[in-house]
Length: 197
Image 1 (cartoon, helix red, strand yellow):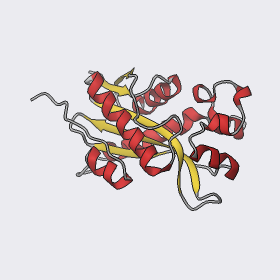
Image 2 (image 1 turned 120 degrees about the vertical axis):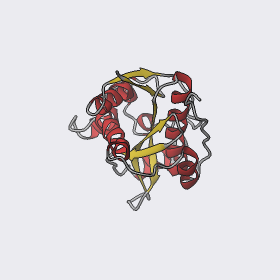
Image 3 (image 1 turned 135 degrees about the vertical axis):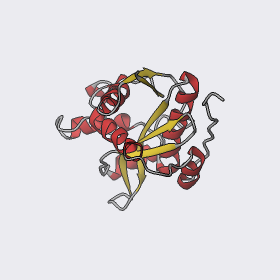
Image 4 (image 1 turned 90 degrees about the horizontal axis):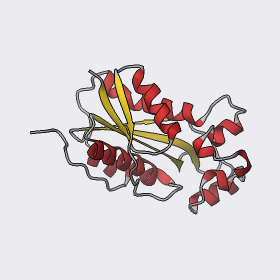
């Protein structure tokens, strides 16, 4: 029997990445669920990026009554780099018991001028001035343009989701709650168990 996974997005790139990641390990049925992340269109900082991913996952699992909810959020997070930040994707996987696992994609530095705009809430594709490439968020992403297609947004999302699956695949004995991870990130996200009693 297939495990139902709800992805908290209406973005087909995120959907395909989650489907590919989960299909490596599970017989799955993946559904898209439009949810609010609780953060702006261009989150920045660990609290917003991790908090947004957790919120998407929680709302997806609750709304779809699925076995897993997945949330993916991208943005610059604090890290030792030229501008003090790297662009990354964070995937959160939340189960019906409100246990959460987190994974990250490969990350990269962003030009300081672009970073300043992103930290002010300007979405990356607008900040880098590449709107002429079409809707990057719905296609290869800025990383696809920057790497001439060697790495795409879908690749980053898929890798972040696989990283978030590791504790579940390896059977880690203790998986943190949504609230525990949110608190570590400086975010506030709550989850209520959807397991039938």
